[in-house]
Amino acid sequence: MVERVECVVIGAGAIGLAIARALALEGREVVVLEKAGQIGTETSSRNSEVIHAGMYYATGSLKATLCVRGKEMLYRYLPEHGVHHDRVGKLIVATEPDQLASLERLEKRAPENGVNDLAWLDEKTAKALEPELNCHAALLSPSTGTLDSHGLMLAYQGDAEDHGAVIAFNSPVVAGWIEKDGFLLEVGGAEPTQIKSRILVNSAGLWAQEVARAIEGIPPETIPPRYLAKGCYFTLTGKPPFQHLIYPAPEVKFASLGLHVTVDLAGQVRFGPDVEWVDKIDYDVPAERAAKFYETIRHYYPGLKDGTLHPGYAGVRPKLQKPGGPPEDFLIQGPAGHGIANLVNLYGMESPGLTASLAIAEEVLSRLDGS
Ligand SMILES: Cc1cc2nc3c(=O)[nH]c(=O)nc-3n(C[C@H](O)[C@H](O)[C@H](O)COP(=O)(O)OP(=O)(O)OC[C@H]3O[C@@H](n4cnc5c(N)ncnc54)[C@H](O)[C@@H]3O)c2cc1C
Figure (cartoon, rainbow, N blue to C red):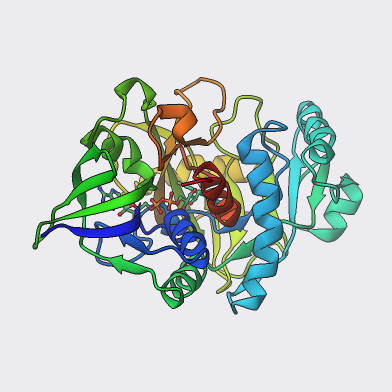
């Protein structure tokens, strides 16, 4: 017998859970199909846990608008749901005079993106805030913060389940067919089964393209190529040298925001992520990469002592941007993009996906309007 439900969301990462929550809050019947045995085992637990302010992304892009809206929604949601977070602020630093232009570009773009709280700090003021810092100037972003990403996902899961959603773990979607009245999905695992839904949201993160290709009837030309950019983190032994998050000035064609310093909510300092274009997903952190980290970090933290960095963890960015190519936006593809009613595919959901998750869920619902 085929089970029938109104909505299926594929993937229980931060974004899939936020979407399931939003659908359930609308009173819809929701089943989340998750291939792993628990929530958030992939990208949502392998990131910097930073609440981004929103000035980095092209004005008018989904990344810019959903980041700024998502940040505002998060700062209301997190305290209401008891999720640990800290509006710690960050400094974006120019360590060389030729990086000042990059800070000026960010300062100009910020208000165009709706980020109105940046402050330009000269060298003396920046060093008064952060005595260990080497810089010519810095931009202070007071609305940047950190959050407990697992706590956030548990809160989304709790809201969704309180409104009737069900998460089916160990339930990989392995195939699918588009039928007149919805989507028939084949679910693998120890007890293979079939489930039919009227509405389908593909939020499978790194595997969104693979899932879309497995569903017969999704036009292959609407499925964008996926590129993988791995990022490793190293942790620091000892006390945090900085009060704020510290980010280097972004390069013009950046595939990431640079090797930055974050302090997690337990006080652990971590540096990263770097960028390595890869063909396969693995989460190893090669110890020999520390040499490059020491060199890069000492541009803004000259006091970094030998022997204090240790391999931490790694994440992999699901990119639509080609190696060396220009940055690409999120692709939240509804019926206008693929021609199929009641289906949304999410591709390229890299940073700032965690920050934007509540706003992404709103966007997905708007693309399903009338469904
Ligand atoms: C190195 C790095 C640093 C980052 N830093 C930040 C940051 O500081 N701030 C920020 O806002 N964002 C950051 N991000 C981005 C953020 O982590 C992601 O945008 C977000 O976690 C993506 O969530 P997701 O739910 O789309 O994907 P995931 O968390 O990857 O979830 C996808 C889920 O789908 C499941 N799945 C896959 N295939 C199937 C299938 N066939 N059937 C069933 N289930 C399936 C997976 O098991 C997984 O649980 C960073 C990302 C990286 C890689």
